[in-house]
Image (cartoon, rainbow, N blue to C red):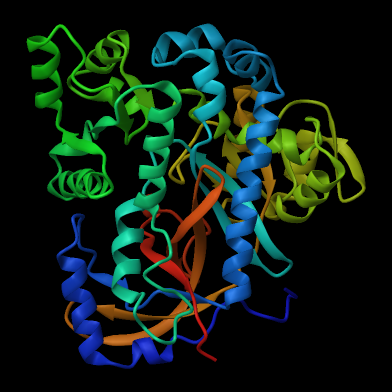
Length: 443
């Protein structure tokens, strides 16, 4: 793809039919998550070749990150320390590790890289790895709504995200010999009505695929643990990050007790280490062993990404101290905290004053767990919008595309969009709208 071309195809047909807009709004209202007043009234349509490429890039990115992570050491402590993580403190805060062989084999089983189309092609901004991924339900239900449209190069036979999750659960059970009786753990968001419906949808989707699954709320989890000495569920799918347990009113005690009883809580804890953006910096800087093809892939699709630490660094042929480079080229960089997520702890140079940027750079240098990444000018997409009151129109959006990758295969692509004139951080925490990307034959 050249800078003069666009991967986005026209969405006029999907936008022009008021009756269909009403159907979509009704469909969205019936979804098991919170309704958003303004919604893109159709999927993000991509040229088929562009859709195929983002899925291919996502799959290969996860493969390279997994290989790179495992190369950092022979066990979890070695790999964490090589990343710059204080292992003793991390292990104490996250007592959810499985056996080493399970950590190595299954931590990258589910992932959702974040990609954008820039003027120079697809770029991988980061990768979310593990079962604590947003957008699963939205992706499957929105795809179901649109897949019958003749102008979409898509069919109902294409696998959905929950197909991939079910495949993971069945393959894990087959490899370990445990029954695929699964609890979906949604603490602490479970008490939110929208999230409660989402977890129940996932449990129903797994049951429809032959897995005995139930969405387990916090009270139910505690009741089972208090009443039974055995194992309520051989497998649990953790649908949130470990820190959310620690901050909840129950704390991490119930999950710790579940693990001690022998429940396999998936994805394994190493997923969160593998998702640390410092690993992306290792790959970009050539600090891990990759073959020639992998190196070319990283150079093409991964933006310049480096650990923020004192000392010289090279950028565009210029070698100077890291602090000097970041201060001199403020508009060229974004600062990201390695273990950060959800668009939090992301600092965009061009959105800050020089004094604010200088403070952020020095804080990142002293923090020790931040990375600097080359800023990407996102190619805008003209998308139709429809509001809850029925008005419609179109406007430019900045879009992040996130294909789901399960066991080395793509299973659909969720998107997040913000108005092009808005901020550079495209995340739901910054008000982005969730949608789904589909290939289209529409000219």
